[in-house]
Length: 316
Ligand SMILES: Nc1nc2c(ncn2[C@@H]2O[C@H](COP(=O)(O)OP(=O)(O)OP(=O)(O)O)[C@@H](O)[C@H]2O)c(=O)[nH]1
Ligand SMILES: [Mg+2]
Ligand SMILES: [Zn+2]
Image (tube, rainbow, N blue to C red; front, side, top):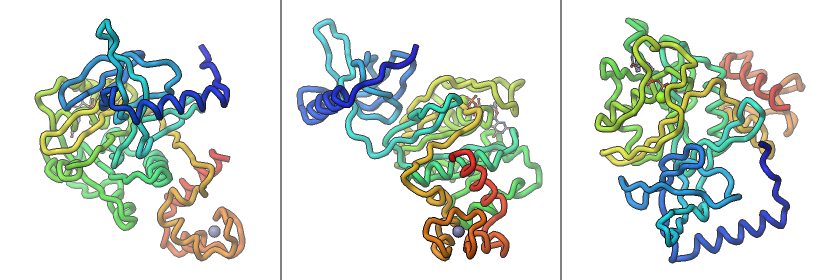
């Protein structure tokens, strides 16, 4: 069923009501750790989650959201307001609708694996999305045990480290890189994202052996598209920090902030664009484009530039 569109006046009324809740001491505040269908789990304190219903017209509520809760006489809990967010990671679904992924996060972990083979277009879409939303991103290459003696098998370290991205190679199987992975997560609210089957839930489980976390069976290993994890879940880590495990994406369409040039999603393109003749250069076929010159000179990786052009074409 199509969602009812709200008038401007209705939106303002809802916003005003939310503001009242966020300023009131009468309502308990909590952290959303999962949201599935109409069921939402909210922690009032770490480890103590309660089942809540949702007041209508609040918009999407996601893991990491802080909310105000009211408890009725029948002991039924209801989320009455979403507290102001520091940030909201969004993506566009297969129907072109903008979907919230997680809120108030401090870093996005883009999880790739040796198998299924990494898709660098997808990686660049994730990184662009994080840049545009001012969220730090870290690249994980899991299942490194399957790479044999090959170091940096997909040249991910060679391409992305010079751009300032941390690249962490891990193996849940051999334990390689797990210590570094823990360090990266320490005292952060991280979201683990990537296609199905790369081992997001396996990595999460490794840090939380006491939790029941569904992982694909061995026969499904290395295959993409099984979607073992159906809903996002926020976990507290014993070393400090929180981790949100998300369901695998089939393709990730980044949310493009049209108010900012797309080059803001590509660090090196943004840097070189300062030298372009035209301030509104799109770095396609304009004369005296410093970005295109940098690509020809090998200072910008061809694959990064090609992916920029591809996203630009899709966004326009
Ligand atoms: N060889 C190897 N296999 C791994 C590793 N990590 C995970 N796997 C296997 O990969 C398969 C998929 O793991 P999951 O953790 O379910 O993958 P996921 O990314 O959570 O998948 P979705 O929930 O569908 O998005 C499982 O069979 C795991 O045992 C690893 O480091 N090395
Ligand atoms: Mg999973
Ligand atoms: Zn240019």
